[in-house]
Length: 204
Image 1 (cartoon, rainbow, N blue to C red):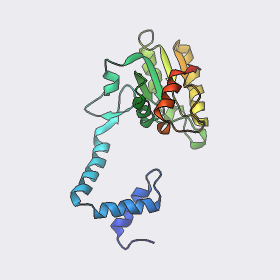
Image 2 (cartoon, rainbow, N blue to C red; image 1 turned 45 degrees about the horizontal axis):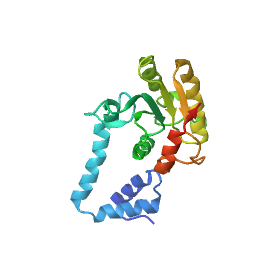
Image 3 (cartoon, rainbow, N blue to C red; image 1 turned 90 degrees about the horizontal axis):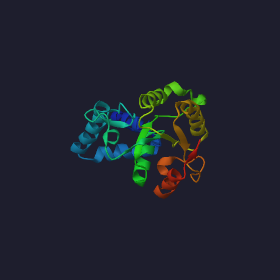
Image 4 (spheres, rainbow, N blue to C red; image 1 turned 180 degrees about the vertical axis):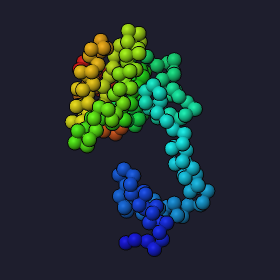
């Protein structure tokens, strides 16, 4: 069924483009927005515009941050262990580790993993930025890189590729301990399991 209102249909179509949102969920969201006060709809619209206008990737770790806060607060914090960098696939994976309160090092966000079937190669993710970062700090601060990628075929492929690139730099390369189910997404793994995986990381 299609609504007689073109505006509602356009809104439903846009919501349907979001990950994990089907048409029925998109319809519910559209109806919710329709019945909200105009001020609430304007706040939502403003937040969407702000994300596109004010959010950038940190010039060091590639995590998301505001333009007014680059490098990000984690990269500039004096309380972080600057000798360890945890490499993750996405910002939500970084947040998952931050929730555990266990890892006190720095991060590097790849914004994807190598997936030939999807046409994603090393040049399509933030591998070059990681190598430049490590080369610039060679012989100084960074002693270990933890490859904390999702335990999927693509994640394992990316970890092996990075391991081969990083070993010549003389930096210890480790990966998370097993215990995280194969095929699991890190953002959905509980804090205790993530902490144990980080604690029991092994050499790659």
